Image (cartoon, rainbow, N blue to C red; front, side, top):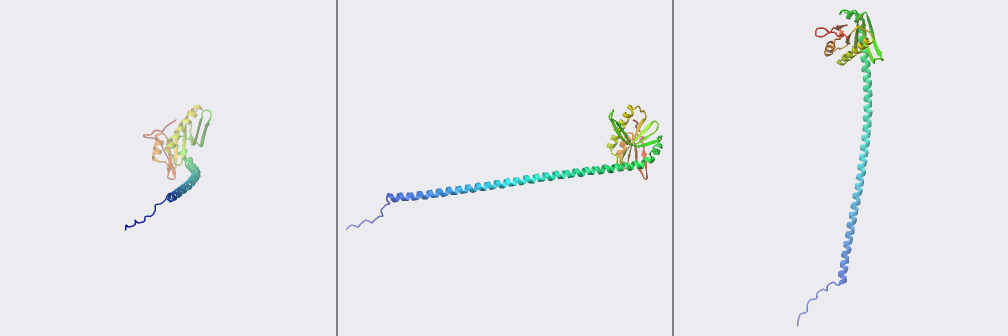
Amino acid sequence: MAKALPAYPRGLDFEQVWASIQAIGEKIDRFAEESRERIRETDRQLKENDEQFRKRMAETDRKLQENDERFRKQMKETDEQLRKQMKETDKRISELGSRFGEAIEYMIKPNLVAKFNELGFDFTKIYPETEIKDKANNIFAEVDLTLEDGDKVMFVEVKSKPSIKDVKDHIDRMQKLRLHADLHGSKRKHLGAVAGMVVKDNVRDFALKNGFYVIEPAGDTFNIIKPEGKYKSREW
């Protein structure tokens, strides 16, 4: 008697296969939609973070500009205060220098005529603060002390601490005074001197080199140094 063949399961029919395909398709669609959603969410977060970053950068930039403006304002105020202080300091220094000049004039004026006359002059008059205002010829000059005799005039510039520039200024002053005298018919010889409370060696030498007498303190009195030897007294 022949053996019976074993029973095999029957294959899937079309409906089952189609249902399986549809189920897989739905899973794929859900996965795709979930992926797209995740991508959209990631993109939204990136945009939100970018916007927050832009806002933070804008705020930082605003604060930097605000601080820069505040700094510039503070610097301007500080600069104005420094300029004001410097101006006030210059004013006080100028006033102090003027007072020193007045003190020197007060010290030397009483005996200046006698001291110069010991050097061979014959001055009889002394005037403080001579001022020339010749608008017609555009000549303006101020002289601290002026000594006169018949044919000579000595113009003395007084500074607390004369400088090379002060000596040069006095040379210019002497030229103006000579021009003014010539225009007004005066033929008297003009001589010059520089007086100071403190006279540096280079300033003294420069003044003597240019023919000026130099007046400086000596103990309780003062000396007049005559330009002589390698230096010559200058007449304008």
